[in-house]
Image 1 (cartoon, one colour):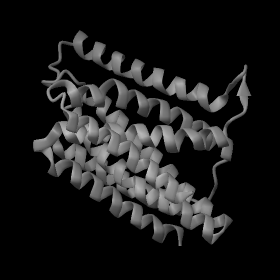
Image 2 (spheres, one colour):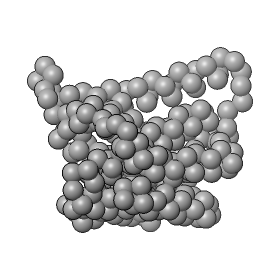
Image 3 (cartoon, rainbow, N blue to C red):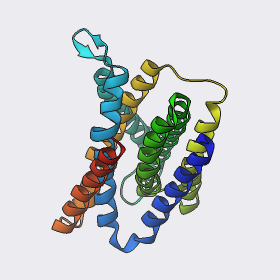
Length: 243
């Protein structure tokens, strides 16, 4: 049952990626929406789950929050190191100054997160049908945002369309693989919470430091801001329905 439900996440991820690539003439709106979706996923979905699963304090601070900050800093460090290495070797950067490897790394992290989504579906169905349905609803709904963001992030950093599509298909297949894996093993709740906190920090960095500034760089329009707010609102709606 869990694998069958995960196929819905597969389709929804592809729909999100298809939407992102079909609106290239409104790139600033795409980026504004992507930034809002990412912000919503981090603040309203990933971080609360991480705190619930890995809220044990470490020197007065919840473990999940420490890893959240660590994820943010690691994402910043990786981007700076890749940019510095490329400059040192005299390589040509993409016209917008982005380093393609950063986009691929970020997309790969999103694929890893989608695997965890599938594992969450499988684990929830092991608890009970009601729990499985609730988790599946949340995952399937926000996988639209995952597909949208995976394609957008990969393309934003100057990667070829075929690479963006490859990462999109990998992200779509990941929940199915994750759900199938629960037939073999499970991940301890605290470890899963720690991962969600770390990934949330990295995702927030990409949204706040890269996606949103790029969205407003050439088109500081009210419509872009409205798309960002709409993205956050959509995730809020998904989380509320799932609860």
